[in-house]
Amino acid sequence: MSGKAFFFEKKKQKTFTSYAGHVPYRATGAGIKSLLVLFFRKEHAFFKNGVLVSLIIIGAGIGGLAAALSLLRAGADVQVFEQAAALGEVGAGLTLSRGAIQCCEHLGVGAELRRYLAPAGDFAFLHYRTGAVLPAPPRAGEEPHDGHIYRPDLHAILADAVRAFGAERIVLGKRLAGVTQTGGTVTAQFADGTSATGAALIGADGARSAVRREVFGEGLPEFTGKIAYRFMLPAEQAGAFAEVGGPACLFVGRGQVFNRYLVSRGRLLNCVGIMRSDAGAPDGWNGAATVDDVLAAFEGWHPSVRALIGRAPPDRLIKWGIFARAPREGWVQGRVALLGDAAHPMQPFLGLGAAMAIEDATVLGRAFAAFADIDEALAVYARRRIPRANAVMEFSKRQGDLFDTTDPADFPPRGAPSHDPSVGAFDPEEGLLF
Ligand SMILES: Cc1cc2nc3c(=O)[nH]c(=O)nc-3n(C[C@H](O)[C@H](O)[C@H](O)COP(=O)(O)OP(=O)(O)OC[C@H]3O[C@@H](n4cnc5c(N)ncnc54)[C@H](O)[C@@H]3O)c2cc1C
Image 1 (spheres, rainbow, N blue to C red):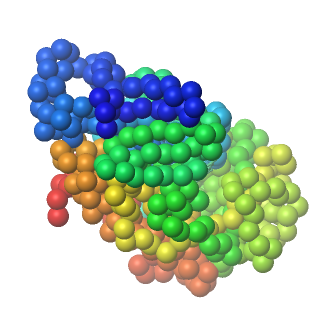
Image 2 (image 1 turned 90 degrees about the vertical axis):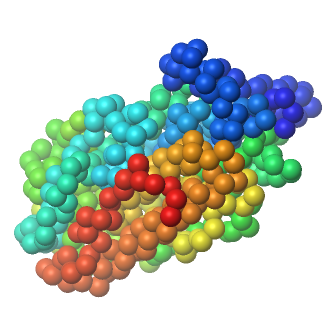
């Protein structure tokens, strides 16, 4: 790269904007002394021959924003490019594992997260028809426990933390259309004809990743034959029906589950029903559904489940297709790496999709902070994350298979991933070399 570590190029007009320089120091609040120390440590990852290293992230979802925050805190020069024209209130509830919560602490957003996180508590499993609690070993003895959060709340916490490093860190309305690599730089081409070049590119663009398609030559994930119906209810409208099973619980039927938990400081009840469907796959996150469809799908289920479905706001009831890929062994190609759902789309049966993206992001930042060489940092990131993320992909699939094959009265069977505390455990401080 020339003197400019990072530039954002508009074709024809040829305007360049460099964001390299002082921003990280201002944002981290480090004084002039720290700045001088960093400047003279030229072997560090964020200086290459005296030039600040710049990184491009594609996708401002949970993974992309967490990665940006992690890298910015490591001192790298980062910009995130998102296809959406605005960072809106999209999505419903997310589960955060103990490990992901610890990662958020590591990323400096723990206090803000705790303001919104609803503890999952014992997270009881209930029989779908009787509502009886299914006897199970305690889920996790250690603190902090898993928690639930409203996706827009988590998204806003991460976006605000990234924008504290400069509003220009997140660029909206940029849909990735192509990627080229030449001599240690990566250029992202966007659908609007503009492009951006950096020292490396992180594909955090979700399960249907364009980066994965462009760089790794892969098609779309495959429909699993399962769908999820989702809706959010203001807690006061759910009334006593939200209390059966405590603040968070899962009703278990054969091949079908209904999950509900409070988010957004107890303001909203997140409800999700997952089941097999012969009607094919709805596209994206927002397929249409009716209350009658969902009531028919949950015929014979516990009255509190049916009552909640009956109160679903018809205009906010959505249907998702559940898509999957086989685990991938390589996430890095030259200076391009995958992260989050782009690397390992999770089936939702353990609710670990967001958690794994946050873990990835934390390790990526640590690798860039620890290794001077970009290729080495990317390789260490992938080496550290692939075994864990692929194992959790398999656990998530296995959990779904167990729901299909186990009599609900016998749930959880021995060895169910949902009741193995090690599945959600992750230490963000753990060594990078192994
Ligand atoms: C709109 C939306 C709503 C969701 N709602 C829920 C929910 O309610 N519950 C739940 O459990 N999970 C939900 N998820 C999924 C969940 O957020 C992810 O599984 C998990 O957080 C991993 O995040 P990720 O950042 O890897 O992927 P995602 O969260 O999918 O983020 C990917 C980002 O990349 C952007 N993007 C995609 N293609 C391009 C492109 N070509 N160029 C530029 N940007 C691109 C997308 O717009 C998105 O912002 C939702 C995802 C999205 C995108």
